Image 1 (cartoon, rainbow, N blue to C red):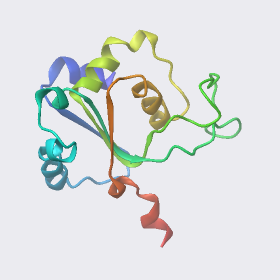
Image 2 (image 1 turned 120 degrees about the vertical axis):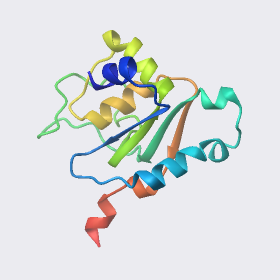
Image 3 (image 1 turned 30 degrees about the vertical axis):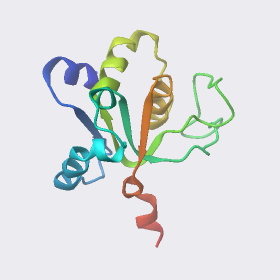
Length: 143
């Protein structure tokens, strides 16, 4: 529903999703996003139209079969979840929003919202996963 609202009422190039216990330095985030063309190695309009999925990724998570995050719908894609952004949040581009909104009737949700987005976005081609380790908040609490 949030992406439907963004799609119909906003004209942003990017959407930031953060957890409710996270704080985003928007000044630094905006500065990095302005440099997106430099990070991707090209500044063509085609690259700007790619689906950007920007966050901290770890593709080793096993599918949860028990406990709080147990999958109610069968996750039949593989033994591990497809890579998804975890940690404090992630950024997706307008192209990702457009794709998700236009295909929402075909998309199945999973127990974890981050897993759900990673699974949904994996079907987009080309998908540009930009890894930024500062979105991984776990390390901050383990030191």
